[in-house]
Image (cartoon, rainbow, N blue to C red):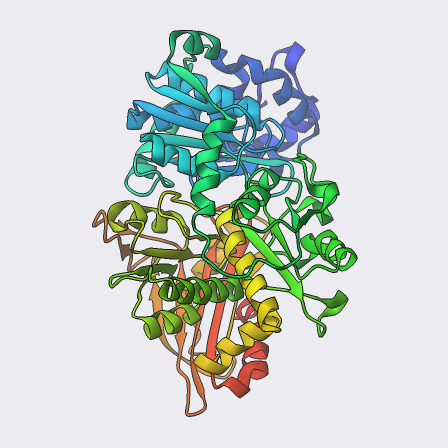
Length: 588
C-alpha cells in the first residue's frame, strides 16, 4: 500500500515502482510536504514539474527537495532550482517575498542579476510586496548587489530584495533579503522573516500586477539615471595618485561589466580592456571551468590571465556574477604564466594598508576612524591600523551582514575606512552596506598604479608588509561536502572530541560560538553560530595560530580558516603549516 503522501491521480502519477520503492524511506516531513505539493490548489502550477521530477528522482533526491524548508543562511535563501520547499522556484521566491513583507515596508527595492529566471523572480517578488502594501522600486535591468544596496540606503527603503546566487553554480539562484538599515537582514529580523515564510506554506499568496502599480504610481523603475548616483559615489572613494597602468577586467559572465569599468573610468583609469567572452551576463557560465564563476578560485581566472598576457597588462581584475566580490591577478615573473593570483586574505591586507595610508596622506583619517573585519580576518589589518591609530572592530561573526549592521548603526562616511572580508568581499563606502566589487577594484587599481610608479610588483608590495609587520600565512579553504547534514556532523564531532594538539601545536583555547554565542553590540542579542575556533599556542620562534571551522551558509562546503604568524624569514614555513591544516582537520 502506497504511503498517503505519494498517492497520485492516474493523470499525474509517476511510475508506481519508483514511488513504492521510496515511500518507506522518506521522512515524515518530506511525506507531508510532498503531499501538499501534489494536492494543494495553490500549488497547481507546479504539478507538471513535480510529476517530471518524481519520474526521474531517486529517494535521496526527493528527500532533499521536500525534507526541509530552504533556510536563511549567511546571505538569505540560496540553492538549486527545482520543485519542492528546499529548492528555489517561483513558490519559494513568493513565500520569501511574503515573509519579508512581515517587516511592513512602506518602500521596498528589488533587483536581480543575470541568472536564469532572475528577472521573473524579481517581478514576482515585486508583485508580492506590492500586494502586501509596499511601494516598490524595481531595477529595469540586471544590476549588481551593491547597486541595490546603495539604492535601498539612499532611497530610505525599509526592505530590499536581490535575486542572486552570487558565485554559486549555474543551476542555483537565491533571494537575498535586506532590512530597514540598508544591509542584509540580521537577528531578530531574519527569524521573524523565516517564521513568516514557513507560515505561507498552506496559503495562496497575493500579487498586485506590476502594470497596475506602475499606472497608479505605487511602483517605479530604477533607471540608468538612478544608477549614476551609485557609480559617482563609488568613484569618489578614489584618492589622488598615479593612474598609469594597463588593466584587464572580467565580469565572469555576470553583471560587473555594468559597474566596475564605469567606476574605474570615472576615477581616471582609462586603459581598461575587457575579457570579451565574459563581458556580458550568461546564466550558463559556459566559459568558466565547471560553470563556477568565483573569483576566489584561481581556475576561474584562466581567461583573465590569458588576456592579461596578450595585452601585456599590469594586472587583471574580476568580479563574481552579482559584482560584490573581486579577484586580482598581477604581473609576477616568478608565477606561472607571468601573473600571480592573490588570495582574499592578501587582498584584505593590501586594501587595508593602501586605504589607511592614502587617507592619512590626504588628511582624511580623523581620530576615531574604524576598520571592520570578522574574527578570522587578516591580522595584517590590525598591524597597519595600530600604526596609524585606527580602531579595528575585529570580533564580528563571519558574514558581511554584521559589517552592514555596524555601518548603519554608528559609522559615518568620515570615520568609516573599510570593511574587509577574507572571502574576497570588501567595501570602502558607508552608503553601500554590503560587499562591493567596484569599490574594491578601484582600491586595487590604485595599488597597481602605485606599484608601477614605484617600479615594483604587487607581490613585492605584499612582501613589504611581511617585512614590516612580521610574516603571516592566512587562508580560507572550502571542502565540498555531500550535504548540509554531513557538514553539521563534522563540526559536531569536532565539538565533542576536540584535539589537544594540531600539527605539532598545542590547542590553548577552544571558542564555541554555538554554546557560547557572540553578542551583537547593536541589538544586544546573542547570536549563536555553528562555528568552532581553535587557538593554538606559539613558542619562542613562532607566533600564535588560529583555526576556525564552520559549515558554509550558502553552499555545501565546510569552511576552514587557518591563520599563523611569525618572523619575516618564516614565511615558507608558515605557508606550509597553513596548507597542511585541511588534511589535518579531516583526520581528527
